[in-house]
Length: 119
Image (cartoon, rainbow, N blue to C red; front, side, top):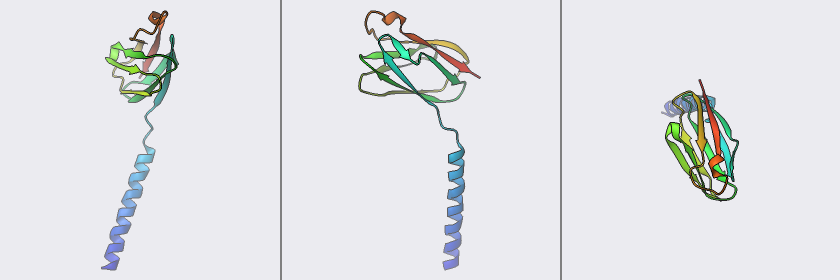
């Protein structure tokens, strides 16, 4: 019996090592940090890959703001002192406009940016 247990333990260890290698080989999902401040997103040009999930992490430097990407029907509130995370997978290639959709003062109407989705 002891040799059987050693065999089972060895097989389990080999499977675990193989699985760990597969997990380590998987590419990391991109996380893009965006700061919103009156009246700009930094960065204001983002590039993502078509069909590849990504997470946008937003912080606000001053007041409550919003992020809206109408062509993908995604949005989030950006609240000072908090990190807002928005995970999505671009399903179409092209160039799209994102904008602040919560009034943040004079200059709000020009607070936008560009998302490039590449194949």
